[in-house]
Amino acid sequence: MSSSPPPSSAAASPSCPKKMIALRSSDGETFEIEEAAALQSKTLENMIDEDCAGTPIPLPNVTGKILAKVVEFCSKHAEPGVDDESLRAWDAEFVNVEQATVFDYILAANFLEIPTLLNLTCNVVADMIRGKTPDEIRKFFNIKSIFSPEEEEEVRRENHWAFE
Amino acid sequence: MDMFSVLTDALIITIISFLPFEEAARTSVLSRRWRDLWRSTANIEFDERFFVRDNVAVETQRVQRLEFINFIRCWPHEDTAELILRRFMLRMSKPCEFKCDVQMCISFAISRDVEVLELDFSDPTWDENDMENHEPEFDLPMQIGLPALESLTLFACSFNPALLINLRSLKHVSFGWIAVRMSTLNDLLRNSTCLESLRLKKCWNLEHLSIFERDLALKTLVIDNCNFHQECFAVEAPNLRSFKYSGSVGNFELLFTRHLEEAELDFGSESEFDESGGELLQTLLSSLDCARVLKVCSYILQVVPTGEEPLRMQSPLNVRHLILNTALHRDEYWGIAFFLKSCPFLETLTLQMSPPRIFPDYQPPFQFDPSRFWSGNIERLYRCVLRTLKVVEVKGFQGTVNETRLLRYLLYNGRAMQELKLYLSNEADGHGGDRSVYFQRAVFVMGFPKASPNAHVMII
Image 1 (cartoon, one colour):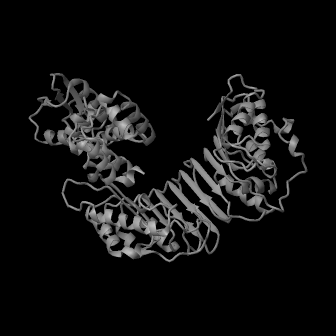
Image 2 (cartoon, chains in turn purple, cyan; image 1 turned 120 degrees about the vertical axis):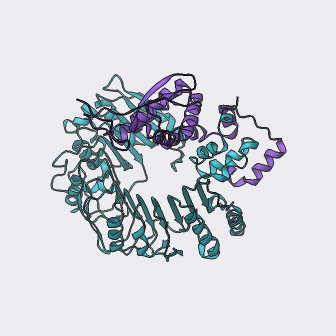
Image 3 (cartoon, one colour; image 1 turned 45 degrees about the horizontal axis):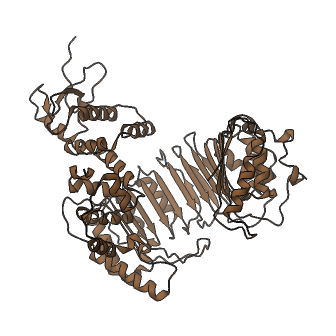
């Protein structure tokens, strides 16, 4: 029995094979992702429309390690029937990684235009900033303040209401 | 290496937009790069209270207010296509003094297609408990063309009800300090079919509360000290998860489903002991019986045992987490026992210590000796205490006799107990007691005999 691939905007039904999209990371690894999951990325959505059938889409800005996780994220978020609470819990686990990886996710989500992942990861970084003093923030993220003491004083005066 | 060096300015602005406005402003001092990025935040809070302090002279406040207005006027207004504004909040008292600026702010927010709009013109000097009806401080222009608006908060700001018709994407609505008619609410519920939460704070002119829209998507309903012509509350909300009510006791007809997760009842505004109020409260509680989290006030603790069944609810409650707003004084003992007996699956008990509410004509259902009430007679061995209660928290612990009596009882009988958390009160008790005294008393509680070998006491 053969079935033709479903039109790209329709959800795949259990009896039809789901259309798979191939992606290639910057370091040459190939990944397969279901079309429904790939559509979470506006970038991929545009590329699929102008598709040259079958050839893996090259993503020079994303390494294999990160692309694997992004595929995982998009697949999870394309799954039908997952309730809000479980998805939130899953997301929390997904971003429970070291700082540098969260930043990699942000860049990937930005490049691939995945709003859900971008919001999730940016919020995580905001959580890391929340409640810390400027010194603590600088230390945490290794930000070098090139302000002279006078400049810093001036900025504090400018926005004094936020520091009181 | 600076972790943010790999991110573009736009991405940093996206991150900053998740911070509260004050914290966003504080990022200005992190480095030269960060100095002005925060001004592109998608989350704006123009809050007078950032500038105007309440512990200074009136003259100083006037100067601070002018500084606030100046701050608003100097805010970058360029209409760049990339600059998203997701949330706009304006909070100031007496907006009539700066009408033009307020109107400009509102136009600014509308022109940027905000998703969340909050206008709070209430005055911090207004008494929270005073039911006096204040004239609205501002009148919202008829047209706010914001079809994408998801969240609207209007405090002391009147509006033409027809305005709500076009706001079909509304998910969250909060009205405060204004007159609202039931017909406006019904129109809102009918038009905004995605509405998830509705909060009414200090509203008046409501005839009663009557909510019967079909397929109501509403998940949260909060009624906070509103003034109704008739205290009748009939609500059918099959998707409701959270119900909070504070005000006077009235006639409640609530049709909720097993989706209800939490309920909070606060009848603190009642000033008299109603010896026939128990029946009404028990009926109300049974309509909330699916809730996993239940918070009740001292009035309920004192009045609920006056119903026909003074010892427990006719059918058990599903409550896993019970929060009592209490002073643990003897007039509340029967009520506390009532709830312990009615919540056979209780896992967490939170005692929020508050000043005692004494009703001069309080009558207990039976004569009793307060000093022996919690002494572990067989009547006090409740299923939840023996089998399921794991965590007890005391917020504002001072170590009074009332507190220690109950805690001794819970530790002595609580076979499943794992944690007793004592959050010390930071306030002086008027008898020379302070945090160090409370600490000593908490240490004393640590030494009480415990039924559960796993139970341990934490002092916080």
